[in-house]
Length: 320
Image (cartoon, rainbow, N blue to C red; front, side, top):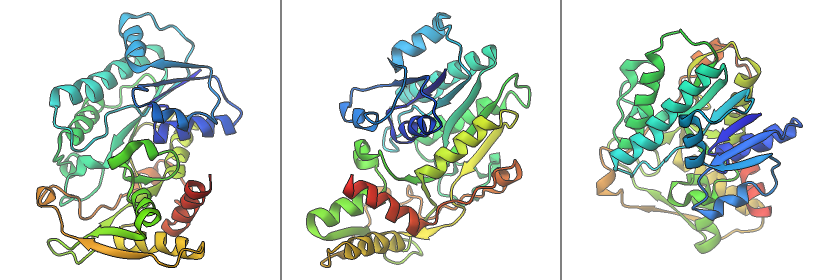
């Protein structure tokens, strides 16, 4: 059996679908379906069982979970960067992850978990998987950073595989349930469909209108990295998962507009809106994954170019 926590979420459900494509459906999906819209991510997936996240961790903590498990893809977390309830985030993102990690180490089970590029804060110290680069600026990032630090406290003394993946700006299928936390690609598409106008932030600091840059990574690439580590259980560590290229928001919106024009909607435009005061000093104007560690460990597959990924995503989003 393989367990996917957050299995009804964006990356988790895509992992389940990718395992199905390999002919594997002995899967336990763990999630919180209070937001029932997430069920749409699983309707085309095959898995043996579903369990609520609280019921699952209670069995693990009580020593009552005894299934024969080969790997856990731990994708479940509160991912809201605007959540400031530190007690909740540390229980949900940190303590939960610790208990799963310890169970995996005790049972020789591969543990592949979602970290986050948010640990790098504003990015003024770079984007390498080193302590010197890590400067979280919100509570979500701190919870992810602290779990990475806990993993590091073991040194290399792992009895089984442990891998942390620091996702950069992920976009792609199965993210509609995320609402305000959905990707810019998702929001630009929705805005154009509704009003024919996509909205971008005006310039801030040294950046012109829409010139802020992020490393946008297609969800299929995130899944491919997860499955590569599943296939290479001798590889451990914490790794960035991004395209390795920073691209302007202007390039993203122009590609979304081009897709719509190619599909017959010619009245699309862009509107620049005032940069929110509450985000000044708290916004990543620039991110770019350093993927040299991922390459060094042996991952060779190319990442999807931004334009190709957006077209593939919008084909799925608007025609599914």
